[in-house]
Image (cartoon, rainbow, N blue to C red):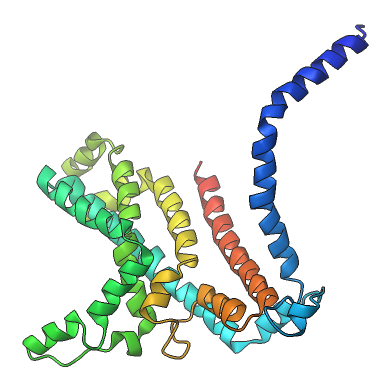
Length: 299
């Protein structure tokens, strides 16, 4: 049985401290600028902190009151429903399916077609949210380009921004965000062996059958990963919707990020707004757990 020498232990401890010392500044910065705001936000969600009034002069712990207030509010429930509708339409259905279709078309297209389509789609992706919002507002607005075109061909005016604003902002988000899904699926399709698809074609499988039975099973992990990432990104979209509709008319396009912003900064209820942010974090966590569960069963 060997006995550890005290001097050897002390030497190892000094070497461990010496190795960890260079990481100390980075660790301190992470604690101050990353962990600090998170901890404060969690605490703030349980307080009555406000920009003015009693909450500003004397903020204090109020337990779960902010969460009770949220779940009793019809405006909050409306924002949650609109957030889920917006995420389903623009991310899960729109960006995901359009991105897959574009990737399949680019795979079969010539180099010129791939270059042009890729440049256009990726160009829309790199445009800032606010700029994309102005572009779509100018296109769909009352005096916008789409109504000018309808006038030229004798059709009546459309008012999508007023009649179905959540659909209008969903279309804009599909236009702006499809490039990410297209790039993910293009990379995944490049790894699919052509021999398998050619063998299925020789056996008489149609294009749709080959896609469903051969291609999609081979890229299912990319599909799940893409769905998780675009869902989380879409849940937090703010600038695009705010620029196009500001959540209106009324609250017809007020998703959870816009409702949270209104409560925290327009009405000054920082504690309540922070509680709403935590709820949004939980919604994102639920989506992530579902997708990770699907990924885990596929491995």
